[in-house]
Every structure is written in C-alpha cells, then in structure tokens.
Amino acid sequence: MRPHRGNLILIIGILSLLLEAASMVLAALGVKIFCDPMKPAGSGSAFLQALGVSVVGSVFGFLAWWMAREDIHKMRVGRMDRAGGVRTRAGRICGISGVAVAAAVVFMTTILWLLIDMPGSDGVPRWFR
Image (cartoon, rainbow, N blue to C red; front, side, top):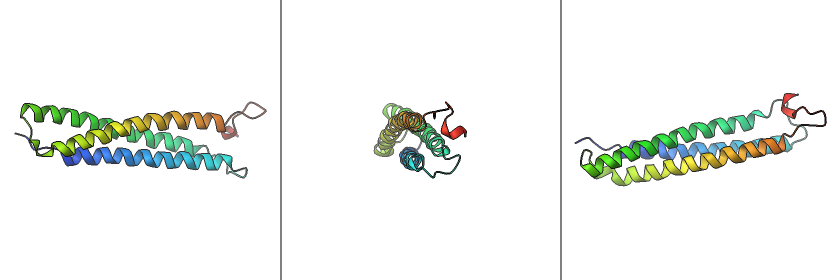
C-alpha cells in the first residue's frame, strides 16, 4: 500500500488559490495604473502579468485536481493509505476552485484590458505608443 499525498495535494491547491489572489491584485493595479493620466509608458504589462500569474495558478489547480482524482480512486480500491483522504479532498476542492477563479480572472482581466486600453483617436492602442 502506498502512502498518501494529501499534504502535497493540499499545498498545491492552496498555492493555486494564492496565485489567483495575486493575479486579482495585479489586475486591480493595472486598472489603477491605466486610469492615471500621468501613467508611465509601458504600464500595460500589469494586465499581462495578471494573466500570466493566473495561467500559472490554473496549472497548479489542474495539477491538484488531477492528483487528487487519482489518489481518491486509489484510496477507494485499497492501493493507497486512506489516512490522507480529508486533506486530499480539500486539496481537490482548492484545485477546482483555483481553476474556476482562474477562468474568471482571465476573462475579466481580458475584458478590462480591452475596455480600458481602447484605441485612441488615431487607432493605435495606448500601450503601443
């Protein structure tokens, strides 16, 4: 019988949620920077950073979700220690939540980026100038 990986799965799931929270903070900073009339050149990267952190968080979420699914199946058939079942299920929930939040963050950040950084009167987006 193999030992459980409940602690590892829970840590990966929580890391996914923390990365999604960081991406929301970066998106909020992007809105603040874009709304500032004295913004520095190249400040559109805050939205790109938010999208990047969100994608990395979703990878961790998928990893926790997949590992938990495999381990729960192994626990049911008796090939893995059942002692970590609660932590494995909690990690699975964190992973699923991280993926769901990542989808929402990517969608909202993209919409905000497109709305805030609309092309100017000359048709060139502000972040290209």
